[in-house]
Figure 1 (cartoon, rainbow, N blue to C red):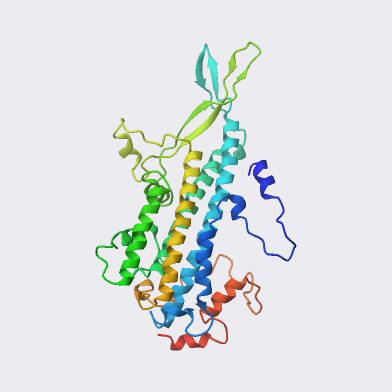
Figure 2 (cartoon, helix red, strand yellow):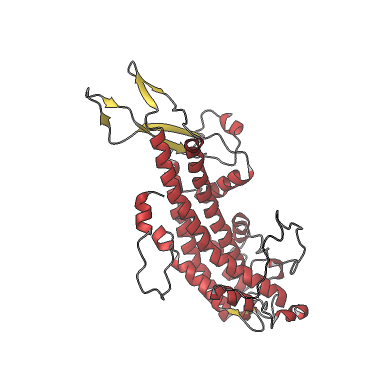
Length: 382
């Protein structure tokens, strides 16, 4: 990180040593208080005694599924904040890496007979050559974390709005597609009306928190980074400001690196260059793109949190209007092992005779009937 960011984040928390900390999200600029309220509401409804899970869902969708879905819903809701914090860390590290890369190429443009010529400096060491990869690492990490936040939000939407699809395999694009089929005109029951209202609110939010297509671009770019061959990277050198002047009074060419992300990440390089009239990249620096994505994603999450919290409270007051569907956990609990034991099995003994953990983890264990006094009940769950 840049020294200025380290100094800012190193400022001590207020309060005594026994008081809880507010956490790093606010200092990182990714605090989502409305979403935290939603996660807290879900946590408060997790029963640590029969019927377990979200109590007011009972008897639906059966005891084992209720526990599995409830716990995954809470995990998704809490993981949104984790992903946003990780994206902000990558953002800060990216800005530092980007500045270092620009410093390395600051003198790459020289004047020869009055004509600017690019003279790429030869890397002096493997560490210096890693500067480009480090910058990529962090803009890739930032986008991946934002997409992770969106997918975890999708899992929360599934659980809160009782959509009949797997919560364990939540995918924002799929959930968005399911919701768009819920329309007020086609709604028959109160529960369907509530789902349709959420769908309309979410659609309005997506359009209001960023430029047209921002969400589709972000998800497509994540898919390219994870599943596709990387596109050709395009950048340029632009003059540094302020301009420096030499002893002869002439400006000294100094540049900074501007990196452009692909305009259509779902296309291949060949497909893009088949149309030479099309601009293949976004006409902005990657820093501007990432900053916009962070702000748009944060705004979407906070706006959706308000809608989801209202729906959650309505469902709690009207538990018979919208039952939790079995399709959210179609196969029941799975115990099939992968078969991987590690590269050095037995190096350390796993012995959980005594465990120190967060109170929320303890509540999750009890709400899932996994403590020693309750685990036997799983044999009787439907």
